[in-house]
Image (cartoon, rainbow, N blue to C red):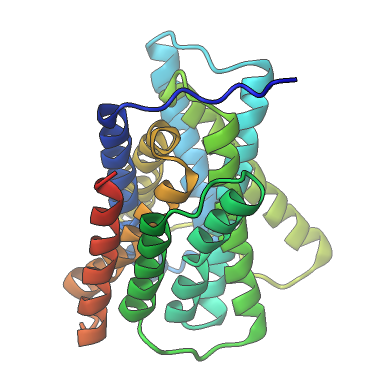
Length: 299
């Protein structure tokens, strides 16, 4: 049986996808700003993330009902539910890793996912190992390492959680880019938010039944809830819609490498808004990541 090759995208489609993925990366990078405020009022990662996805799901579902837009059904519903579960697992791993190991280590391991995706694309999908793609991947990873710093303190459990986050996020990108072509980004994103909420409901239920001792505390106070709503809207809904719309236009490996802008934005937020220091290595890392993104733009 002859295999049907996909229709090549035009340069305009690629540029549109490229810009959408950049918006997604920058929006995801805003997470520390909102999480910092929520944690100040004693919220825990599990409680915060559960509220994050439930609020995002309810807000988007309300909008869809008002606009009379139906959710995807059948196979499409299942595809975006799987993507949402992957995103939820990635968030669970990343936020948990940040609590048990250094943030730098969590960032470095989490954003190693472009290497997994590029390797998968070359070995499984038989995608030719183009020099520009490999170069941009190396530059992006090197930039993340420099931007995150060299604090490698932490235990193996935290590193394991960060690796789990990287694999979950990479798998979601691969699956979404090659199996789910978004016809209605808002409706599809609503299912993704539902999948994320399901993961955290299961995680909290499992933690309670197994007696793991993992604390679960919801946001408290007006400022904490305002930060949680901001996390749900500007750092969850907006980037999810942009990413699922843009990643099929750029390809999984390219979308993953462009997404390395996220940790640079997050570290910049930490420096400018939270008051953390800005080492020279962080600045150099940001330059490398931006150079990697520009390399991909020259498609």
